[in-house]
Image 1 (cartoon, rainbow, N blue to C red):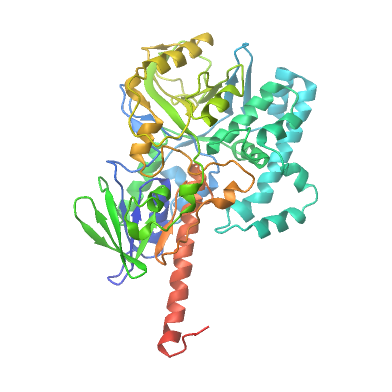
Image 2: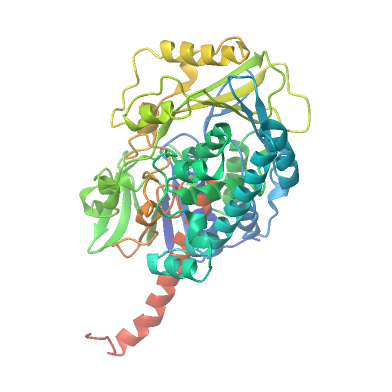
Length: 513
């Protein structure tokens, strides 16, 4: 479907070409806007980024898709099918989990198979507990999907009403419990508590501080995980190609220095090279804390002020490299746990890089329906605290040695050995994403009402809107993509309201109330 703007079409600028900014561009273009996307880096994608290697580009950010329907809906806006632009491979094994005692556990998308795997791993009682937990997660996801994630402006009153209408939902939520507390009551086996506790890290939190409600994340993953052939950056490339084919301007190396206001409205965006770009609507699809801290000018520093007070989510150290592994039993997603499940979270909460972190290893060339090449691409992620420092540690070699030694204890080595040159630190993330403090998920998810405290799409400035993982409904590729829908629906609703009210005002019918 080709949409050609008229000369009178409103002009929309989008700051940030991450998945939220790109999704906003698609939606605004279909609505008839003239759209330009401004990206400070050399390529679009935001946190969906790569580093080069002898084996090709290696993902250094998100690695899989969940909630596929969000992306099917996005491509359908242009009358396109997602599968015609990228090859998606549904994963049979969602993740393979390793413990220091030599035990492993695979979880897949089939509940009966998962029960059998848990039974073989930890016995009949644990299998029954898993089934109960899985049903709880499914119920929580179904209950909160529409009034929370799908709603543009969720309210506590609406969520309370949802809960009261469903007897039994309150105990399923465990509202006075953390995720760790919920899991202690759900599983007797500490390894299963450790496994499902890691889902708090999906939104940058600790299971000892995040609400029990986050148990619903298991359902998002259990419903299906897809690998994008070639890497997640292929999804970004496909969207960028579609946008260019529909006359959307993608402007890279465009560092926004200031947002210019006239009266109470955004009039233009000024780039660092002095270029001034007028607009009728502006979407900021970066970390909203950049606005609140004045990084884009004093005129917008009153926007998203909550982000200057709220604690930040976790960050990470990300190691991306190409090598030949010593073990051949890896799947796409692999988690190597340490014996003390709480040690790394105590360190991160205290602002320290964990001494003994669990390691998430994405074997990017696995799970693609064919044998991996001799030299494979890998991404290793460990939790780390956010930081206001933008200067990398002088020597990352000790940390890298520690991580490789941990892997060696599992019989996992790589040839050649990875080097510190391809480590992305929280300090590097802080430089890449202004205002973020290196946090990868925006505000901290800790506390029962933390999800309600994220900035929403509308701001105090009538034609300035927010999207991205730092806004509602939160972090992660599907959530950031949903935030774009919320932002554009707000834009179109506000535009309709203005067009309806303008004739009334011209007739002298302006209200004085």
